[in-house]
Image (cartoon, rainbow, N blue to C red; front, side, top):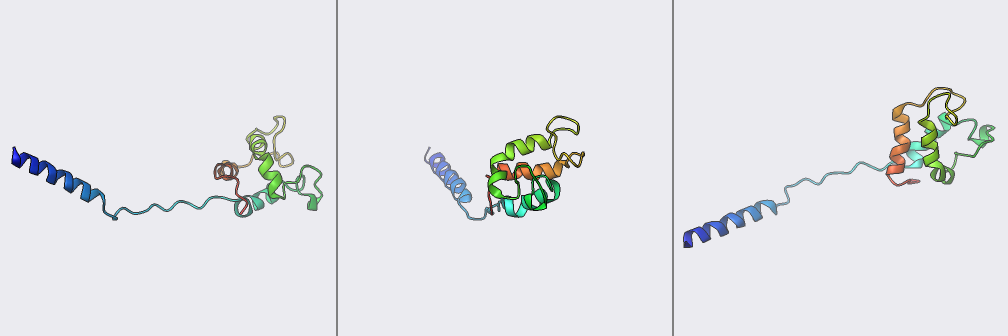
Length: 116
């Protein structure tokens, strides 16, 4: 009985010590997307001139962080519509944005709507 007890204690000690080591690698998280780096250029390329006042746009300006942050859900909804559906954007291009482009907007929203 004494041998069984000692073996059990040794086995438990071995398991605990083997899991306490610092050999586990820390996983690096991917940098979060932000307005300045990931969205600003996409908006300038795809929402111009309508939503860019400097280019003659007369719709709500999306050349600034505050407006895009406020309207991101509606922007994504409208980008996901098909051409010809009411509210489809970008209106003037009459072609749907690529799934990868729309994914950038969704990722920015999922990452917390960071400015920089």
